[in-house]
Image (cartoon, rainbow, N blue to C red; front, side, top):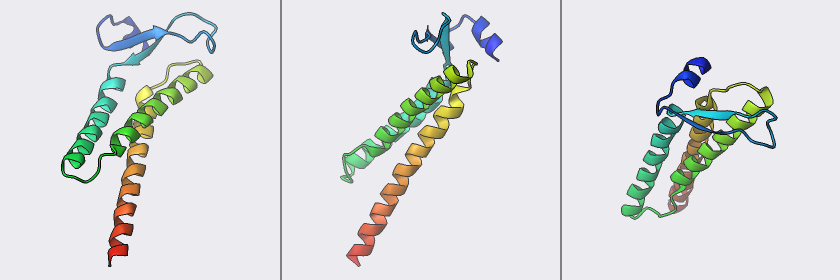
Amino acid sequence: MVKVATKVDAPIKLLWPKSMWLANDRGFTMLGLGDVVVPGIFVALALRYDVYQEQNGKGSRRVFFRACLTGYCLGLITTMGVMHVCKAAQPALLYIRRVTYNEHQSMAANEVMGVAALHASCQ
C-alpha cells in the first residue's frame, strides 16, 4: 500500500518534510486524502449538530465540535508519534478514527448524564 501511494502523483495525498528533531533521515511524511476527508466529515457533522442545538436554544457551547476537533488533533499526534517510534508507515485513520470517536462518545455520555441529573432533580 505504501509503494502504491508513494508512486502516484495525484492530489490524493498530503506531503510535508519529516521532523528534524525526531527523524535523522530526510524525506517526507505522507497523509492520505482519506485520512483527512473521513474524519473531516465527522467533525463537520458535529459542528452542524452544535449549530442546530444553538439555533433551538439548547446551548451555545459547541462541545461536540470541540471534542471531535481535539480528538482529530490527538489522533494525528498519536499517528506521528507511533510512526517515529516504529520507523515505518502507519495507517493514520486507525488512530484518528478511534480517538475522534471516543472523544465524541465521551461528550455524548456527559451530555446524557447531565440531562438525566437535571431531569432527576426536577422531580
